[in-house]
Amino acid sequence: MLKGMSFRWSLVIPVKTLVAAKTRLADATGPHRTRFAVAVASDTVSAALSCPAVARVIVVTADPAAAGPLATLGAEVVPDPDRGLNTALRTGAAHAVAVAPGEAVGALQADLPALRPAELATALEAAAEFDQAFVPDALDVGTTFYGVRPGTPFTPRFGGESRARHLAGGAKELCVPGIDSVRRDVDTPADLAAAIALGLGPHTAALVAELWPGSGT
Image 1: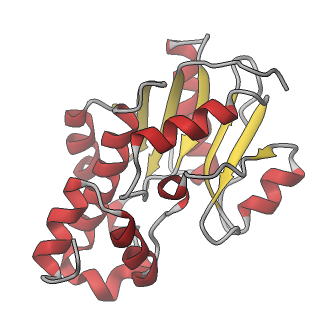
Image 2: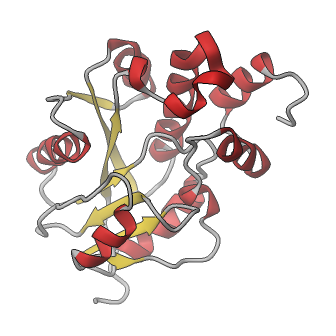
């Protein structure tokens, strides 16, 4: 660990084909599932781009319904080879290294609708002290962020109980206070309620207010 190190970051955000997205929210969102997934990804991308430590956001997707809006926000869009989440992330990371080899590379989940740029900056500052590091999700089961310093192999292990796999792979778990919005991914109605309590980004907030008036947004 090297204290006091800081880097600019290229963040890779994977956005799956939207007809397959947010299946555990399907009953709640109904015919608006695609709109919901785009809104959540838009807030995640917007917050990441607003973080001073982030030089670029690379979205990996095969879905034009996501690619268009996210490119409009300022993300660089890379085609998803459709061989699984970690392959998508490695594809985005390879693009990042080719474009900016001196930057750190991170993977950020696309479903962080309450993400705050300042909290992301705190997490990235902590991650810069280690060759590889990750942020566990709010349940301490999955992972919402994984990042490596420049020159370190990028070996994401997302999916299912990824916290344990990232630990086993030697990544430093970042137990940093005050980054609740970085940890709050949204897969279920209960997750969405927790994100609403934190404060949603504008895209998700507008849609939630439309679909569920009086929900507290």
